[in-house]
Image (tube, rainbow, N blue to C red; front, side, top):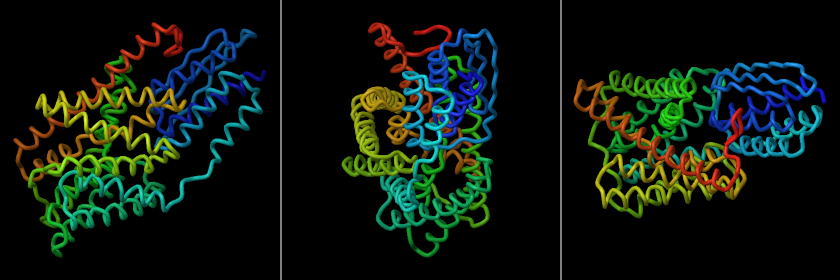
Length: 412
């Protein structure tokens, strides 16, 4: 075995997984499993969203260290799924360096999603949530138009701008300009509800949730990085919308109201989350599973809120369901849980709170800004706690069944 090239191949897989949207602690576990499978006498892994380091002691007694700096990440769950399958193959078959590299290239050279599907995903996501948040027909048409613009400009801008704050600022500014312009022409009457639907295409609140989750698991560095990235993304959205409002004098705050028809709520959020599944490049039946997860996540939120009218409690109940659902689906499909978790959890994401917090700042309504910021943090914490509860319970169950939950220096 050429252990130096083997270690390089393991890092290739790890880097590609991180750049495709892998959760940090899952990536850490995958790297440990691959190192263990090759019989290294010692293996130390350090992985955060911007850096991966692995030091191993080979069966020959030689110490090897390799480091990768990660400049930027994105989401490509189809690639992540196949990389996860490749990692399983590596653990079971320990291929030599040449075979490992060949199979890695096969995954990386998979056919990309057709561009028309990306546009359809953007329309479904943005428009679906606009309807979910109480938009009418004309508002929905505006949301569809702005979603198309977001996809078109975003594809062009993403190749030229890696700073999330600047990227989100430009897209949010253009979106708000179009929405204000349409309102001026008498097309669309609820600027805030339209923009809230569009914000869901840009929002990074799930990074905040994952950051809090990692902090609660004592993965402090990764948690802080994810939270800071989320804050930068949210700041870009807020600044972009605020600049457009200041320049054009638009914007309003009717107070978002969910669609009064519960059936439409469930259908629209399901359509939107199917769109997000496609947006994240999920393929095949996993797209359907994501839509089913979103439907029941919001249904559980509504039922719990009816019995116990608490946003925190209902959100945590929805988060517990979606985390458990993703855990089960990951084992049924032999795919990373994050594929099913991310899109299905979107009905719980506090996009409206981010918008109204920003609107409060722009309109000098400090009470509104403070109230919405509290709700945003409360919702993120409820989601994180729901995820964490399922994480602890699943760990206990797998331990009771004598199954490895994570592999590291101390196998659980």
